[in-house]
Image (cartoon, rainbow, N blue to C red):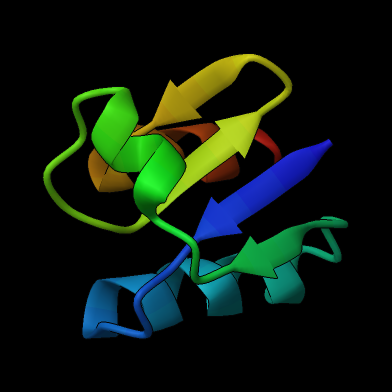
Length: 66
């Protein structure tokens, strides 16, 4: 399962658009409390199963899916 933790910031919107463009199935949540508990200080974060990726890591992962 893929979850996009978003605050609707510009980076969040970019990440969401890239996921949609590649037809990657994902869920969006605005609940960032789980991120804070894991030590993340900014959104977006992409959760893929039990891995959490910050924006640059998520962009790299998306490029690998093409």
